[in-house]
Length: 158
Image (cartoon, rainbow, N blue to C red; front, side):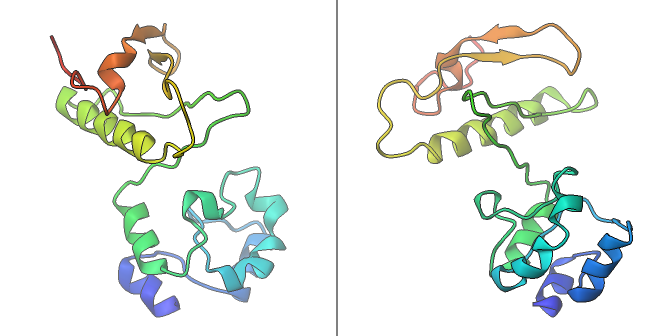
């Protein structure tokens, strides 16, 4: 899988040699993608990767047999998000330098992904409240009907 990852554009590829580098404190990557058979080896550096948010996880798609697709998705800017134990989702949808259209497109992709990941057994309103804010700014409540991907009013401006 080393060749597949390199062809997809991975900057750092390795096995035991990479684990040794991580143990010595040399972490020069922003996302760690592993195959299932490498997880016992990656588990040895979990105490180092975990607090930095770099530990591979099957739920986020970073533990996969299809390394090429995972690397190319990461290089295209795939955003990982998780829900905390209270059911809150906090995710960035853009930066100040982004155009309004780019932020709306990111928000549209996020909401479509959330709608697609809704469990079949979930009943009732899946999205109950939404607030949009800058990093340290005041939060502004957004009408949930405009963010629900199944609604006919999805991301309308009127």
